[in-house]
Length: 436
Ligand code: NAD
Image (cartoon, rainbow, N blue to C red; front, side, top):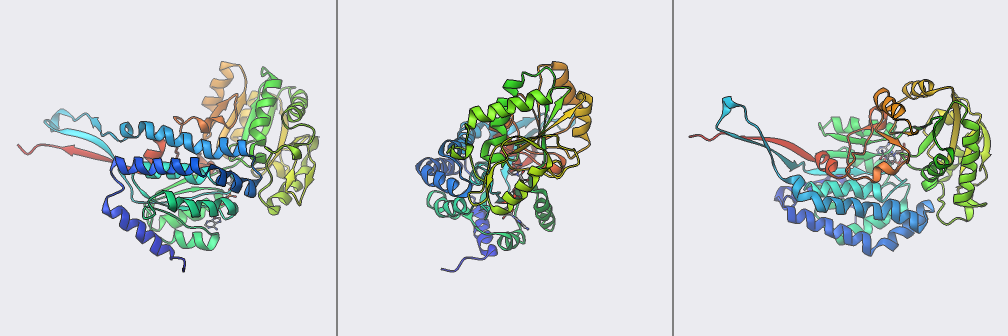
């Protein structure tokens, strides 16, 4: 069988949308139920694929990919009817008698372009929102997670309405061909260089885009923080998926004289959580490919290794690593690390930490460890980031009532829960003035 062209796939999805069958609440809920069945019945197939692509252990694969998507889906199913109810709007006296309301209508055909690091969650959580909003959807998984991509391409059509949801696999040529088509929304997750390509292609058709990008998410550790607790939580957030998480703590700014004690606590926490040999821990992941492995191991020279540093190219294994004595100008401090290396830099005070953050691109997440309400208030008012999180890195994306998205270089737009419905709907104004 020959593969249908991008134009044919999109035309098929557009024809399905035009029938109107994706609009009723029942159809949407049925598709979400089918997606839930897929995730639960095929959980093992997905766990295996995620292990093949990224060495993800079964617990982490379930918690951060499969179970995560199920929770997002359940939250959506629970509230969807209410989210879709038209909202009454007040009408000024001059137009009375009249009624006004705000309705959410589906956009049409949505393109979801997913990355490799959470290749299931970042394809299917946007799919949940796009289906819940009544759209047809084309999912383009990442070619750098080929086992997960193939599993989704095989299984999604078996569970979901195959005329309303299509999976197109492939790399740059296939994605380029897709981007020539007209979509009603493009939802892209990945790096900013490709984000610019996506936005330029979308501009030709005036297609709105959501760009879920990355960058360096800083951590500020203030002088009043409990450093043992801080280290435990930092290690769990940073080394999840071997550091290949868009909201992973990228580097730490240790305020005042906290750096030495913090790095010692980080080494202790790594030992407690991953043991003497993290390569033997089935839950510790691997680097996605040798290109990224070589990029990461070259960064090890940028500081003094406090813990970790050991690596094995054939196994794409790099130990959880903490670096001290790092220059702010070093390569490790220039681009997003996206791997298991955590540099710790001392800064004299909170003012210096805030200035350090504000001199750089607006991050996807800013983390801080402090017990001071004043410090929290200053960070809220004096910095800008996709999210501001105190005390528990990475966890905010699992709070479905919080929007997830970036600002500036870390992206535009937001999703999760009701924010996904906003993203994948048109918010339409309806005014109704009786003729008599
Ligand atoms: P990637 O290489 O898998 O690319 C993402 C997608 O873009 C893939 O589907 C790929 O096929 C497509 N693509 C690649 N080159 C293209 C081109 N020239 N034209 C059109 N499409 C192209 O993933 P990546 O970009 O390496 O992902 C890592 C980045 O994504 C990091 O910066 C990370 O922080 C960011 N990220 C952000 C989030 C978020 O939710 N904000 C989540 C995960 C990752």
